[in-house]
Image (cartoon, rainbow over all chains, first blue to last red; front, side, top):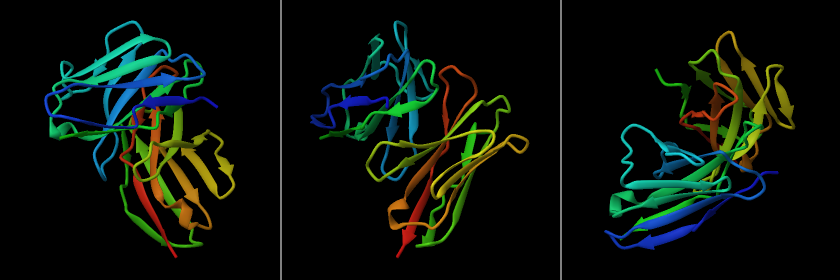
Length: 115
Length: 110
């Protein structure tokens, strides 16, 4: 079946630095990818919808200048957390939609800890 | 009103019990429905799609009620390994919009 890969799985960074997380669809082309954040014991929160070749669509309350999304190809979207702060520490998950299948597949997630 | 509403639980049931979750959606034009399972500290994984005619996979049965705008997931003969959070996902079209429920937490007790 379709596979979505996310990297890195774990990252620790210093406050004020930037961190990039990659999301790749391994065996299908994804015109759309989604980025979520999940705090412990809370539900998934959609941050933005990443569209190949165009700007991402951000959910209300998500700072687009802080969470930079680039979807440069049909198989890769990146999320960059800029000027990270401890409150950005969370589980970040991406998902990708097969264009014709309308089923979404999730990456393994990335645990970000900002110290 | 939220696009998708789901009882967060938690549901604590003994092994062997039957448990059912419901998920309501607000957009009557919704076309695609899914149940995902999320284990602690892991990503959600597709459990099953929900078809108009209902579908069954072993101990799991999913049903769609368009008139009342809800989907359900029934788990029979609960196993300890069924303990997880179950997310319903609804898509209004064949494009790329997906709406998630908040998830229902299930714990199966020995």
